[in-house]
Image 1: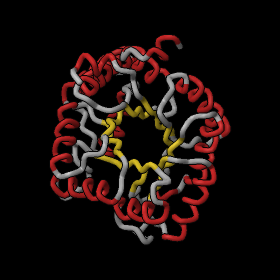
Image 2: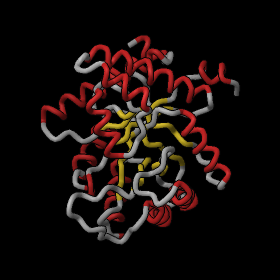
Image 3: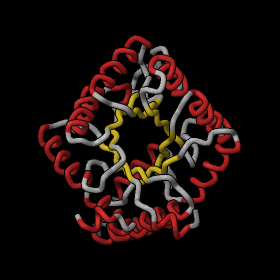
Length: 289
């Protein structure tokens, strides 16, 4: 398919939310979902806390999304988990009607040892497949700019390939602002036999300080020119948001033109930036919203 055809194709999107911690946050997220679900997402995912610390909030939010008539994917981390605890949670999610999981190793909470019976996400993927067959579509994480804890880019690619070989259906990337990193990763993975769809994770830019803090923590690269422009705006929120929309719109256009199968938006439980990005990208649903 050529670039023009890609850009004219329907915009396939999905959204990530995190579990709210307060009743007010839960009500706000419901309003956000009502707005974003008008864009007909393929699914919505809900994150887990470090060490599975928010798993009940995750499952409660997933249940609400399903009740709203939208496919929901639960994040599912294996840090500290046992085979029996995973088996029980898989049964619960299946009974809820969940058909999709985002299988992750997960982050260690502060002061927490590795523990559990799974060392890598590939172990979790393999176990889910052995227990449930094809009952779930399993998404895994991909890192176009290399996982911050990887020993080397080669080791990181091997870890990703192992997840695909273990039975992953597709992958969602960490966010990035360099399209070349994504395309190189996809090509490198394909050469290693990992040819499942790789969906780019998209982080809208609405706050300079928040973006730089998140990026420094997770290893996502903010190109120097973007970082300097954001810093130059100081506290000018309107300019930061306008610049961010331009940058991320251009990134999404590059990704779609190059054949990215869909876009997965990290919403941060906000709707405004994601709605505007989808409007700019020509989403018919967004244009009529």
